[in-house]
Length: 257
Image (cartoon, rainbow, N blue to C red; front, side, top):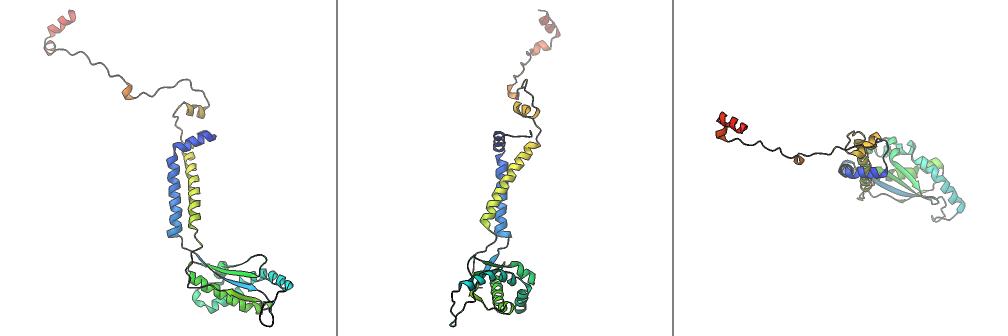
């Protein structure tokens, strides 16, 4: 194969070996789907919602104080770091030894997020068992709420929503449709690359165009491809009568005559 291929040659090459590209694409797509559905374990996400607000009136109602709201918003980033520390996770594990986890494992799977400009934060946890994830995220939220007054000397975290362990949600991972789409695209590219590699290592000269492309020399003549059916059969020799063949004299006379 020449070192360079123009677009027309590339499309022609792919068209000739399209079955290879299609076969590789089908195998890759089916494999990605099978992995997502039957091999990869589903991962579930359970979450709780908290609000950070220390502006509480005498009757327990929240009061609007812009300065305090700004203070609470600035504390959210601090709380994000506090909740993912051993001081919180160790207490959770002490209360729930049945989890059989380490602080590092809890911190690795816990998520703390907030929408910019709001005091509402979401605490979430990922696990292959939704009931287990719900119990963990609820416990982390309760412990976090109890420990903040001791750590920050301010009681401004309130739980708005807890995870329901009895819920049957859809898994967040794996994303089957996305994996199938990625598998199709990647396998299609691999199929095209395979076709190019086959052509690259193929040194056969099949026609005058390939000779000119490989050697850079003009074609002076072409030897046609002769099939067996194109060859004319040879004429059979004249038959000699049996009586003549058995009589040498007759043969000599026939030659002399």
